[in-house]
Length: 363
Image 1 (cartoon, rainbow, N blue to C red):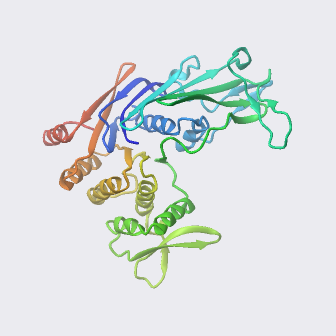
Image 2 (image 1 turned 45 degrees about the vertical axis):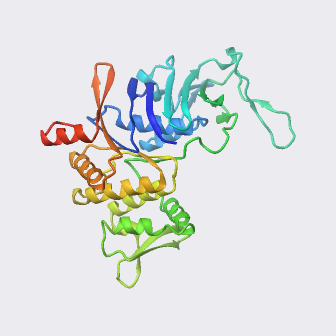
Image 3 (image 1 turned 90 degrees about the horizontal axis):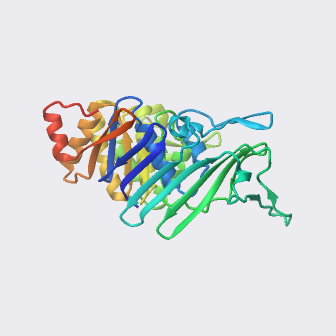
């Protein structure tokens, strides 16, 4: 699955955003609060398509633990109100993506404030012990988030319910997600155990040297990598020639960030990797090499990449890396706020080259 275009309506800061002619590797730039992270979040929700619980997960990408508060039997706060433009629960979020293989898929999110007054909503908690199904909704239930998806050969609805019984999803979404996706947030790290598991999958298929080759661009002394279980937690260790293995985090934030990125690409074939502030932890002197290996890995594993940046050095390095590779499967998009709307300016190889030569602002 490779996105060709993507449209966002009434999500976060976007009343409407349309981004077209998407490339295998896409870099998103723009001023603060213009919606770069929000675009990645919208793509992440669209990749999951059938799973409304993902709206809770994207809060954690921003360092916010999802929570809700019930007062006098009714929910006072919900973890998804901020997803709707202007915090307006009367609006409907619509996300539409187009791919070459699957065509169009549309995802709609709406809040049902009074679910019992909606005759089309009939939800039950199903028991695996032969007991009768219990109604999920009651007069005390405050809010239901409805997720509706519509694609070429499939459509349906799922509900995320918040109330006195907690947070529940009905009916439970079928696995797997339509599009494999990994989100690398600007804040926080992928857990060492998760990276170790992804590295283990590469070892099974004999592709573990992909990661070693990439990390050597930052640390040339690195000889080999291995997964070591210490204190019950698996972690990637490296050999720098000191006579003992060293945990990857000890080698620096840049090594961990780069390892997580490459492992995500290698384990998300025919899927999407979303990276917020891709330059975090990486010195500007290695950005050219990093982009070369990102492009090579994306082509090898057929993974589409969306990343954000604030760095002009990062943009310049990406442009040079893809130009020199002979495969300019890369595009820069700059988001600009115009009143209540958001404009997208696309830079292909020719226009980005011209912008660089004239010192035009592209961040």
